[in-house]
Length: 236
Image (cartoon, rainbow, N blue to C red; front, top):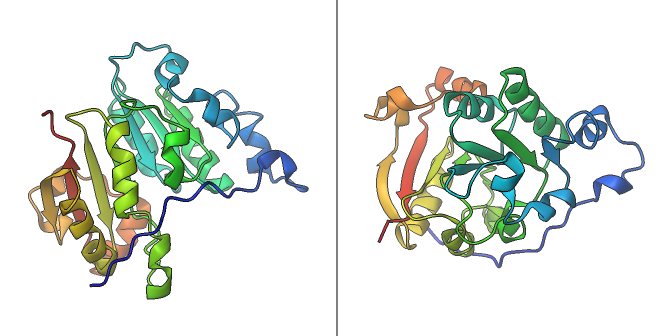
């Protein structure tokens, strides 16, 4: 399959403060959830300081979920791993607030979320600031002319590498076979080391540890397999 990577773009986001008719979710971002959620300006101030924001030492593990969607995995992860910090990135206001709201309703104090473009992670995180990274069901951009918009690109993996700590991994899963066939070679040709790969997660040896979101369940009901891989930044 032909694969052409695009350059990492600068974020092109409408500034939250300029929105003429903010919805309840926009208002909640800098209102009710101000201490837990950050707009595109405030989140950049946390670069290199996220652990201090949580009141934790530099040794504390801190993971990232890119594209939290409605937040089921985000809340699950924060609840299941209370000793790990979790930062989420989401572009759309409604799922952003839904995600942090779910986590807060579970009593989580180890989760924060930011509105930002995942192509520009270096604006939010300093070198070696991240541990595990979760990328679940990103937009597959199915039309060939739109492949340049896919998140998984050679440049993106090169960007992510220095931000992650050795011994950490990227978890990638998708319901799109085409996107998986696009992404897997890019992972394999990167500096990351393959730990897992399967074309049917729910029939694999890793099925029991997978958290099934509502979105994922819809595809399973149709008999659609979930494609999955995990790649690690080695210790040496």
